Image 1 (cartoon, rainbow, N blue to C red):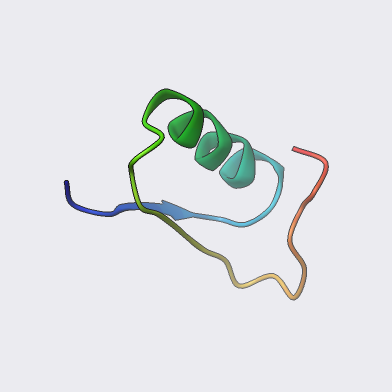
Image 2 (cartoon, rainbow, N blue to C red):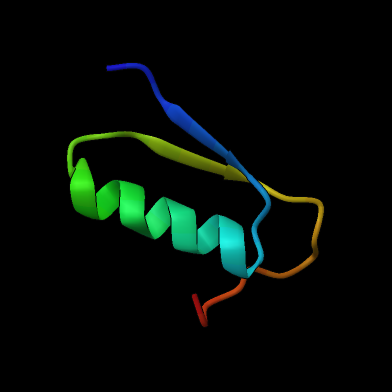
Length: 42
């Protein structure tokens, strides 16, 4: 399986990455963001 790339490391991006990992546990998910922090509240 090819890696899945999520653009944006704040709430929506991290929420999307979380859903992807839940649905596809073997998927490699890469998150890119220009923010200097990662949203842990997603």
